[in-house]
Length: 324
Ligand code: SF4
Image (cartoon, rainbow, N blue to C red; front, top):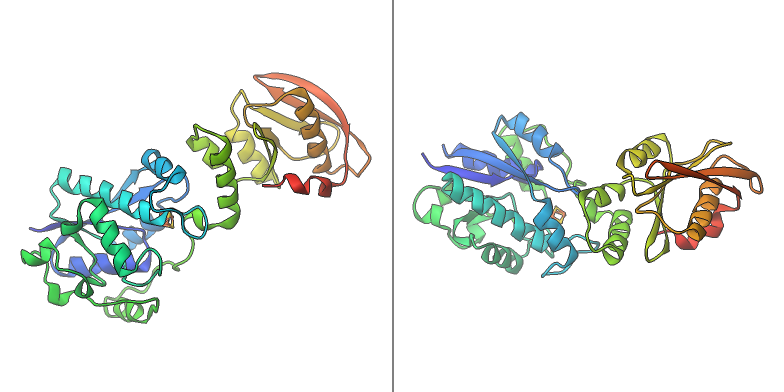
């Protein structure tokens, strides 16, 4: 029996591609790749609805490498979509070879995204992945060169589709024909297309050489302020963010907390010198419930040792230029 491995985001196009291949009597397993900036939640839900086996593979390490220096550049924000697609296909190709799948397929649609899914880019991505001959895009297959599984008769090319462009009409009609009524909305999923997150990530990559998972996780929480090239401040905006920031702190970080008035959790990754600590304490006090001009005591803790800085709350707007 022919076996196919599908790249599966859990969005409508990947659901349809999977259903079309499965309709041909081919045994299908799908794979979702995860990193700290995109996760498998949508894929898990859709795979359950389709009752299809799902593999989840963590590609954080190679992804962080391309994130810093993508060969094919970034999209509108910090999203290196072309390199990301290539990486995912390379990883899928390794699984195909290692586990005896006959080919890989994706839900990509020709022309759906002007930059990353035009004919030239689809060709480039396929070629650079090293698996172009075994890569099928069922939704647009009739508009693309024939692949090995089609040539070998493992897949019936006539039953594949010729969808192109940004309209979703044909996908909706196909979903109806296939009896697929539940599917997620097309938006969201990857934090790299969020302007605020992208700004913080750009700053992180500019100032930190060895970025790890935790550094990226911290970008998801709070306000971020840069004091100097070595010093960044993260300020929780509510209880959930304060808890998350505390949970992600390491012993060598400095954690600031107001003592005589409710205030935010403030984190300085890897800590800083006393002058910056004083500025951070004033920022912490200014984002607390204290009125402007009120004395505030701020506790700074690092490696389980705490010191107290006395300061005053000032107008928060004076720190606007430090916001990342
Ligand atoms: S949007 Fe994010 S997950 Fe999607 S291809 Fe681009 S970088 Fe990769």
